[in-house]
Length: 439
Image (cartoon, rainbow, N blue to C red; front, side):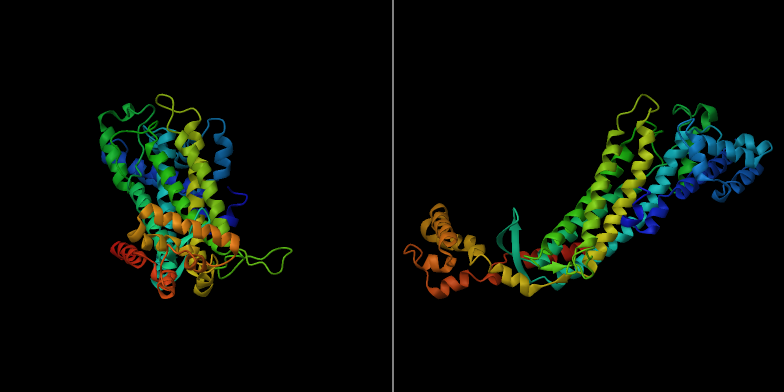
């Protein structure tokens, strides 16, 4: 993640999942633990002050902690030793009282995730605001709907943008719900908290309150549902963003040219290129998130009360999934925030099939006379002749005696702007949802 991260992810997002962020979160746990245990009478108040004063990330080198942590498989153990050395005196004996390394790392992961999610959610707010503007501005802009990458029938660009909008709103809601479930971890060596006697539940509650995290029913050392669902939520969100990015890439193709990013990327050799770079970066980010999320999902299978490897693999994967989801959100925000939409080109492309894009409409119009199946066959036969003759669908239909429609009736049926169904109503429903969520 560190080598190419700045290419894909804004610096602010990289910072919140950096080694410094993890170090701050681990020390935040140690300080909060001392305060909680002082409240139940385990740690003297003077020791709390000494411990908290030394929970300053500027006093420690995270890279050095990682190197020293290799011998024990995680960074908290060398951190705790360093913290005790810096606290010194009698207070040093109260550092990390009753906790285990996984308590430190799991709680730190929740704090890091919360900070990163807050930034991701802000990025998504920008995306939804831009999509709402596009949906409203192009509520009635006709374009070809495409199924299997082929023109199907008319829709509006507003409805396409509204579809993007609703998907982002839904994924944002999933992320918000997962954020509320981020929980403190405090279980001690094997989840019993025997070292703190009967005070375990009270300390757990006080820790949760102090750190602003959820209080779990019990320690979750090898219950990784929270981690897996966080990974799934991030993969869902990045996937939704990748779908938008893919649509923009396809719309920006030279032969389609219906929408393009305002600031396109150039080429090292082709002076004329206007590449959809933001959308490209978003799609790359989403693929990386998928990989990281799969690591988090496989972590559900763990041995007894402490995992041998699955837990350790989570830290890098969690940082990556958070960062690259944020990268995807930022890139899509840039792409749709200044997306250039060419309504005239959309109108011209609707005519590219010589009327075939309205074949369904003609079929339904004839159904009242011939029934659904026969009318479908009549129009299908006419459509097949269009490809062979090079003539329009209207011309082929006029020569079919079974059709029996006047020129004016055919012209009306083959007007894309009048066959948009409930597109505009659905745009309004999407915008109502957007505004109801207070954004």
